Image 1 (tube, rainbow over the protein chains, first blue to last red):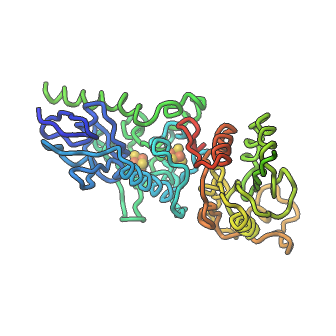
Image 2 (cartoon, helix red, strand yellow):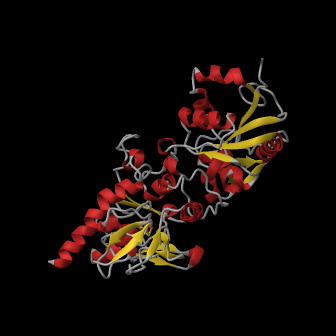
Image 3 (cartoon, each protein chain N blue to C red):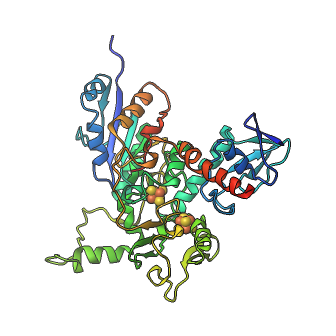
Length: 244
Length: 180
Ligand code: SF4
Ligand code: SF4
């Protein structure tokens, strides 16, 4: 099997795998928010930036190739990821104390993992619409990080309920329904798209604040530990299915 | 031989005093602190203006002209300025008004809101003017360290404070960094 060097460690990969897939298959974590083992990569959050032979690349889209030297855990790369995470915070409205997702949120957990204690940049305080029209699912655009996971999941659900519209700072998550409201769409609470959001933008109603503080997903385990425990097996399953 | 005591100033701007309550939660460690530190301007001391201090602790964001003045006074007089709590760091709950027009907020709070009697927007010249938007403190002055949390736990505050008193940068372990 061909190999790459990952933070000084030799790891094998299957031809066709991206760097993040090769790392994850070896239980090595590369930070990410928009990547998910079950869906094609989107390459937008840039949290998976690594240095490949001295150049910054996105590990979720960059193919692994024999002899690459990949650096993921240097202080330089941590700083870069920290600034990207802070940009995601100031671009939306993230008031964690009043958010249903707090403690279970990947963006927040990323901040913890990177040692983020402030937001560094001036805040945008954008005005975005909240959509509570669906009986079972709430869409709070204030917290959307435009990862397109809901878009990809809804496509896989065979529905195309979500899409990103507009460009740059005007990008917004839109809903495919006659009124543009979630309540008029054919989203079902059991759809994958209703459960995939890494942040508190799409949340299932009447499930909030059930788990006490101290027992929530990221209260004791870092996002790296959770990712290796929960996402690496999904990736392996996908490769096993491919081989069958 | 008595060592020169550390001077600490604290203030609550657009906050709820929750961070100060959490500070009080260091409990008997307050006695250890009193051995080595004196309080300058603070809700705990009732001193009205800062002198030169070693450490300034700021709770709350900036929502009015007085907040700006106090924050600048802290920056000018404190060698190390620490932002404490969600509101100081990102505006927090008070910043939820940023999505509304300030005039609309005043109108609803004092003229048309449910249960309002004697409708009148307060206009006493003693009252500090409200800012158009609520801002985190780092948008107004340079902040040296931030302690997130709503509020940060007493252990977080203690860990940071003891590090600073010893002349080190606070390094918070994973369990002590949280944004809620
Ligand atoms: S979505 Fe995550 S980061 Fe944003 S407010 Fe909610 S818990 Fe905080
Ligand atoms: S709603 Fe959630 S899943 Fe969809 S794009 Fe926004 S952050 Fe991603």
